[in-house]
Amino acid sequence: MAPGGGYCREVESHSKFVRNDTTLIKADSFKSVARLTEKNAMNSANNLKELLQCPVCDISMYPPIYQCPNGHTICADCRTRIENRCPTCRFELGDIRCLALEKVGESLQLPCRYQSLGCNDIFPYYSKLQHEQHCHFQPYNCPYAGSECSVVGDIATLVEHLKVDHHVDMHDGCTFNHRYVKSDPNEVENATWMLTVFKCFGRQFCLHFEAFQLGMSPVYMAFLQFMGEDSESRKFGYSLEIGGFGRKLVWQGIPRTIRDNHRKVRDSLDGLIIPRNLALFFSGGNGQELKLRVTGRIWSQQ
Image (cartoon, rainbow, N blue to C red):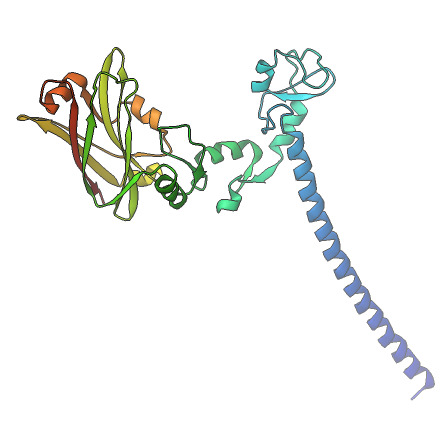
């Protein structure tokens, strides 16, 4: 064997090793760059999201986005509230649109604000707000209408909250017999309304009963709300009945979701409406005391 042959093989083998080592180095470098790029992309998205936050209300801005002559931006709602003056430099805002920032918003992809509660979808910036208004993972508001309760949470949290903090009666069963007594039926404006929660078919339902003014006439109203989404509430039906002395009123409907607040349901008159003169008739006696008994049941429509 020629002396040079072994030397050439050694050089060739060493050369392969160097190439393989270089490949490993390059692969590691690519991973590092990819991680850095991903981190920078996230930081950039966060920075852009901060740019799209209104300096007044701290809520994400959507078109039209306005700016002052010095470039300070503000959302359309706050622009009307601050008398058309820039909150940063006090210059008059006018009608200058920040079209560049509106375009930036079109390029962003952001997670739902309820990601921590289970929503893992990603949305274009301008579609995100619309989704969040109807996201099934958003917490529910407390359905207790006797006070301006600010508690929010999932159904299990609200049921416990109603029981412990509002002392709401809890019942199991799909039929109910609700008694309402008031010594002075003329005090409609100050009438105490009542809420009872029923567990039926493994779900919770809120029975409301209250007095209020309908135009110039005092009325009483009972209605049922479902503690869940509107799409699920339509799987159930319910009936309410009140009567006495050979007369009765019957209401049948679909329970409204607690996504609809109490006043919205009440003002839509989606329930059993009892005029006061009829309520006094059902109460019997001399009309000096209100004694009403509302019965009802819940059923599955599936």
